[in-house]
Length: 301
Image 1 (cartoon, rainbow, N blue to C red):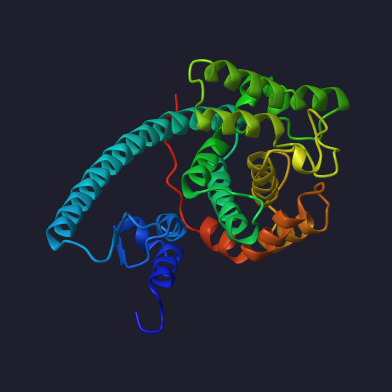
Image 2: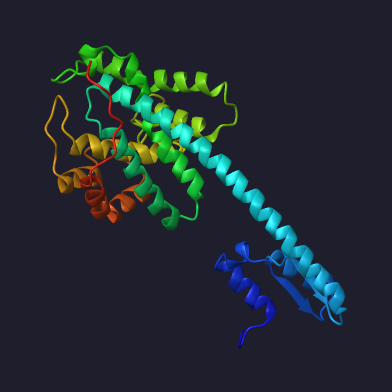
């Protein structure tokens, strides 16, 4: 490229992620260890010194291409296997979430709304913070795991769960146990799937999505970054959807008012970075939730 040396070209290809999909062989008269190491660190697949035998170079090019093709086939196979696991997890979680919503007396869109809100907030966090490192796969898993945030409510008595009026202090204490009960359920399931990131995120979300930034949440009184980021994000999403949706005990609050209530701290305190993200994506939230959702349908018995 005009005006750029080989290392600058490699650096540019690396920054633009082109080198991830294109094997590069660097040819140079420099043969010091530092130069060769730098080329490999910038993503070069091979390094050839001048002068060279063209037959040897052709063979190395051929070998590099064959190796790259094998890697692409392996990556494709692993991707297919991963997508199949996600598909199966998606189906099971959709069924569980649908049963939970029937049990909780909530609209069929609550779980879907939480997932969409979680995706939007995580997408904003990804480009706003250098301290929160979540790739696309991790963000997708957190959004999927968010569907199980209230799984513990399956153990709460109907009279409390669907009470149209304000809960008594005693009833509220019982309601709060849905966090620890849900986490215990997921922990038990996770014992059969050790190392499963989806189950770990689901556990974190179920247990800690009612914690607050100032430590005044429940069940463990965590504060600040003691709260896992997955639970922090779902917490904001859950509060917004609770405000903006009809419940047995309240009417829906308009979108703009719900956003402002959260920003003003009327629903507890949240990570300031998450509040910035909520403000940034508020128009996309309104647009996204205005579209019809694909909801798992269950027959009425």
